[in-house]
Length: 411
Image (cartoon, rainbow, N blue to C red):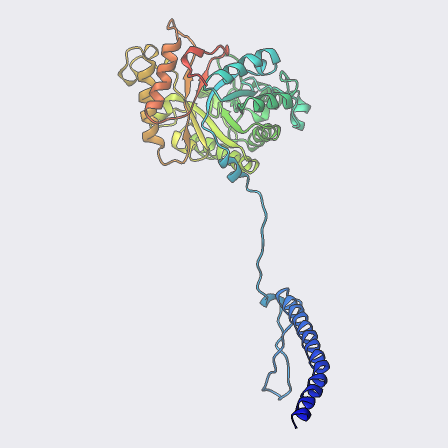
């Protein structure tokens, strides 16, 4: 009996072996097929390529399906874009600059001297004349009107090489654009200029004509110049003479198209300019008279400093001590008191412009005038006055471009 039982178990074991192998193989195949089906269906559902239907009971009793529609599908848009304003802001560096004429900028030898000053000192920016106070453009632009009217005087022969040189020395290029003081264009397009009540173009005491700040054609041209500079690589556009005329027989001026106060015309131009320029990732600044931060009105030239500040990124009051009259800030001779003038002016700036959103970056004096010599002590006194009040930016002006290196901190 024992032998029979043992023999039976062996025969059963041998018979079950092939069956188990087939069963396991079938299970594996079924698992793989099910996994593939599940993966395919899941992928199609997730990708919106598979519609799921459910039976619907009611109505006529006929089964129908509720189909998914494109509108019902969840969407997960991925937007890849470039924000020039955020990129601009992320690259911002506080400016300690110098003014450089287009003649200096166009001479490799003379420019090298100024770049050397930047390399050795705290200076990190150059404000360069792109459009001067006669209306000439300093390089060959891509502006059709400039070509048509002969508005270019290309002192900077190779603008790309110039920008590259500044970039190599980590110097910020700022384009100075003299705005409404433009004798050249006014003479070429008299209908764009400030008119005289006696007929023809109005002229100041020096025979210089101004463009009309109320004329939208003037606005467009000035911003075209600014956009061209931005395209060439300038990182900031600085509008100078962004005002109405102040010298000459002002009572004879006539402004065709005048539809608002002067201060609103200037603010409107700056708002329009910034709206076009910030899309190009550049900063917009405006120069204003130093007294604008002290007086309550617009000085009769349209520079109401609060309105200017609301429409630019940087305001630069020209707080040159030599330009203040005797008695200003109770100083007998402001030109001989550089520290005091700048201190009081920047205190005024803070009171007037805090909360405006604009950076205040003063122009400081590095030139001698009216018998008062400015050297290292006088220039540094102005810088110290501004920095003691928390202002980290400033620009030096000297029309002869001979700056006082001893007044500057070494790099």
